[in-house]
Length: 365
Ligand SMILES: [Ca+2]
Ligand SMILES: [Ca+2]
Image (spheres, protein in one colour):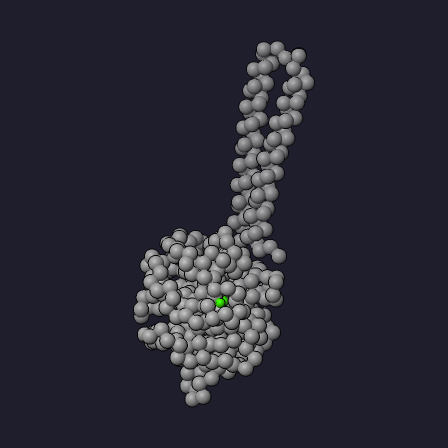
């Protein structure tokens, strides 16, 4: 299914091609007529012919321009009425390609660091070669490549509110890491877990983990004495849940989904954290993205979300109220995974899984 923008750009390029071909066709026909009547041409009619060619070329050029202008006007009119503020991103930096299938990046304001998970191999293989790195948020230099090792295929990362712990998903386990020492403190292995993906924490310190394979969201309760990862919400409506984002002020958990395996069919769901009802954000493919969605972040004021489509290599800007979305960045590579953000600098950082690096963009707000 094509998005409105894809349809528009296809339509514009179709008209452009049609214009050019029509122009060529008219030129060829005219030259053919000239050759046919070559013998009968006097010097005077040659001058007339030359002037005719010049004016016809001018008409074709002008006609082409005006058709293109019209199609651009039509394009502007057919956009959703409410647009997101950002339309462009300027590239800031990229890391060296020393990461290994990086899946997720998280910004730690206390340490002014980026933590990056590297799957290193297949996303579901327990091969013990996955790792976590420290990267500089100012220029993308790798500070410590093998900061935490011995993981399998680490993905989503949540930093605790005091900056002292990381919670990282690792296929069927949630791993707790002490930031000061880089040591693994505990592992949580909820029964029935299949493919844990993203991890977020709310302002109370509760941890939520998506399970793409089991259509489940688990919760590690900050106030519970049992300290175990419990199934919090299970529903086919979660549609292969991948990226998670919490809007604390509205009490909402936003889920971006991967959809059925092998074909893009994921969208954005909003979970009311009090009564756990699930509703779709906007109309998928019309006012909200539709695809194999991976990561989600928000701007500082929670009015826009930034969402990646992994195989499409694209970053979308989405109105938080579900009224529209735009493509912010075309990465021209597959594997745009779970992005991170520095909201007060309007910066997003995208892991490129197949290219083994991160790339950072400044968004014009
Ligand atoms: Ca691995
Ligand atoms: Ca993910």
